[in-house]
Image: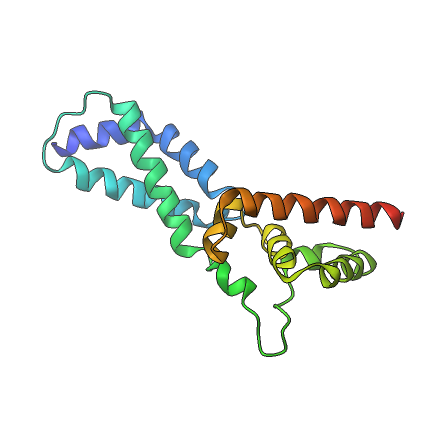
Length: 166
């Protein structure tokens, strides 16, 4: 594809590229937005150098922007397994959710976690650290339904405990 055609494609779909990258990067990875947009442009340039004709440019640009932005976020996101790794003292590092709660609530959540079975505690800690059911299932070798069940069951226990304290 000639340079003018590539520049025209970028000009025409700049808002789409920016919107997709913004949505993927979200508020948690907003600092990655410029990197994501730049890598989308590079990916489009590499894919269009061969001179291929694009039949549906909007769909193609959307697909490239989505895949590339996701790759940028995954590359820069810390491994979630590291967040949940048990150090020698048996306690995971202080999670982000604990820092956001008032100290008395964080203590109550820790007390609930201590009363759970190890699998339930892992599920709840992982879920509260931002992992989804599929990630928990992969990490711990559970089925997706087992992971979902453990999370919902422990969240319900936590809600009851927190509700009783009010």
